[in-house]
Image 1 (cartoon, rainbow over the protein chains, first blue to last red):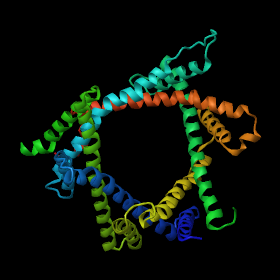
Image 2: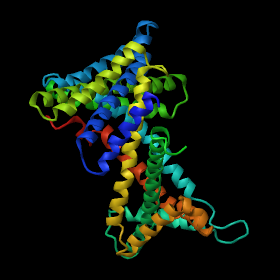
Image 3: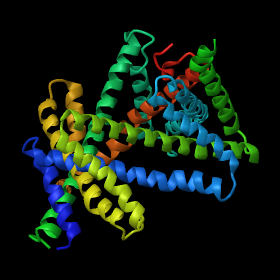
Image 4: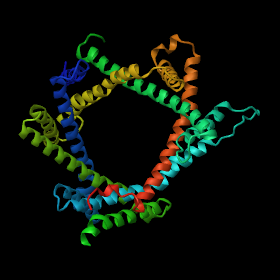
Length: 204
Length: 212
């Protein structure tokens, strides 16, 4: 067995020990995971962003326009002192302003208009029969939207529609829950397979 | 006046100008508009995000050192700092190529522990659902049935069960479930739109913090 498998197996068991109860071995592994993850992202960000997008183009290619994001980035360090903390609002303003500016058309197009256009389909098939699936989707979208409409009290037609919308939401939550459980279980099975085959050599 | 300009008005004007420019260039295919889009979204965003990550790391180190000095969780804080320091040290000495010690740490320490933590949630989700999933009302029963249908249709039991179960599960996922998801996405789109407008117009100012 190589060192990598040994270390990975021991650390996997250390994390799994939490299933018994919170214990020092788990805490140790958890602390190591936190530190290593931060170190990894720090190195990757430094290499892929600070070096590749900032320092190399600025120093070797003479892209002086990058001085602006450099200064904006440095302003973020103002947060460490009370007197200079207002400086950090400028880069935050750039991020939030540009994010909001992009979000208005992008979200409207991707999230709203495309979803609406996908919902609006012919309710009857070419043979003239009603398409049950399309009708269910249209009904589901309208009733679920009515459930989230809070500007009017949920009474009468709106109340009935909101109740029907609740059932569609329950179906959505149920299927999402099922998929979440399945994805976690498949990851767990993967870890158990690793422990039994690569680490302990119990199975092939 | 200067303080107000720096604290409130200045950032709000910058926010508005950047928002307006990015909103306008979204609709243009002109090379200058594309260039502005790339410059702000790639260069500005990524570089500022990189600096925010560095600030986060400095804050984490400060917190850990503070805890070590106070003797609070000293051993665990040392281990975190060890992990944090060892990765950049490996990267500086041996680089970050495929067979470097840096990638060895990633493959044999970070990835196995991360996926194990992820898989641990299977037990907690199962435990929570055992307590929470009671068919007390009709909506709760619908949720339970939808969840069970998905679980059964995606498990290895599927072959031992009638074939219509998988078909029904697929239909449920593709129609009623998707309808609710679609309505939620439409809501998210409209919510994002109004929040973005409120931010740009200066109605929503919580991002400026509580200080005057």
